[in-house]
Length: 558
Image 1 (cartoon, rainbow, N blue to C red):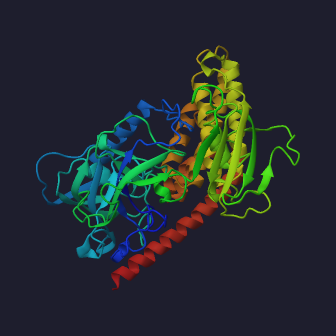
Image 2: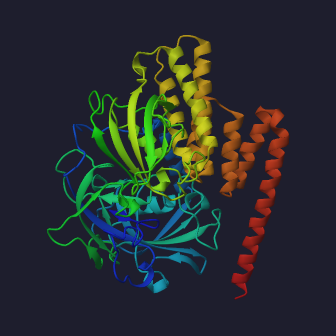
Image 3: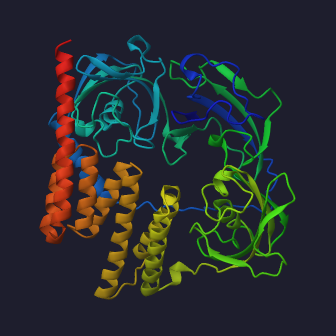
């Protein structure tokens, strides 16, 4: 597993992961590292777990026509000289990487004679190549991807790329280096060191900056997660300068024959390797796991009490002081209870009683319903009983009207969760994507009114997803949802406005002005709002141009 940038930090788990006694140079603060892990199937709470279940389902809505159009536009741009490549050193053999492969490459970013950023030791870098997956995860400038797809091992080349194929490309997830803007035309010095095939690698987190490479075949199809107890053999190394995994200097490893044993979620290992919630079943419930669990969002009825892990004092109990209060009902996925309770109850069957231990992050941190005696950061233990729940209906058997109504409900639920803040954006996204999925599978729409209602809720959810991605600064995803909304409803003013403001954030001034001008044409009532945005955009553009002139002037008079 290769963890880059915001990866594992030394000493995150003092009991079992003490970290190396000394890590030289730039590795003293960040584990910008390789971790090799082997997991044994000794699960403590395995029970009748017989197949995987997905708590959170994201819907990827494919559009092959859009992909084809994008490829054709890209081909036209390349033929017009959007990227110019000069080979500095030839490679070895004729093999080249493919989309989905994980590559290791040295990269230097230049603005004229200035080196703005580099991995090369002879140019002031750390000497450690970049690792990234072509076309997946946190995307690099498109010029890099296209060039590397045609480079052989060891080849070195300089690219001169237009901004649209550099940091201003809508799919690029990297910020330009200090001293450069997204709309600057830069030169990229690339050298491909090695790569690993897509069949072995997977991007494992939402940010796209943690990559796992499989070194051997699995022994079973079961995947450990909280609250399983696992045994792992682990070795951590400083990344090698060669780009070959396993070549780097080792600085920590489990002793031979002594695997690391821990319960996922107990905080003994870095958060990058596990979650921070564990569940232990005290009493069996009724039904089969996971068939009879409330995996999907629904109304559940529970009892739970709260105490500190090291104390018997009950700080809160839904049963009340006399133990006679009725069960607490809430809708999962709505932030009605601490996330640890929401996560755990989805893995329970009716009548089950479990102990759930949670870090403060998934318990009461920053929550208004925090019991007296619990502070931010405090770990807590919940004794949780699932009384019963409302089973989700069979969506396939529902008619169009019922699906549209349910989609509207999911949209409104997502809106409420979204307003609670960025920490809950992922829950809002799950509501909206589920709503889109429902209307997309309403195959029995017969009337114009039904078609309009389905399209209306679908576009609204797409635009909500676009807003979420914009605020999360995942601009390529924002563009994707805006474009999908515009294909569903041509010239939708809010979709044009959102796409235009995103272009402005990236410094794509002409595209932004074009979208915003179109908003005024299709909806004149927006003129005042659009004009204010255009004024703000003009001021930002003027400031960016002035900075560029200052930078150029200081460069020329050196």
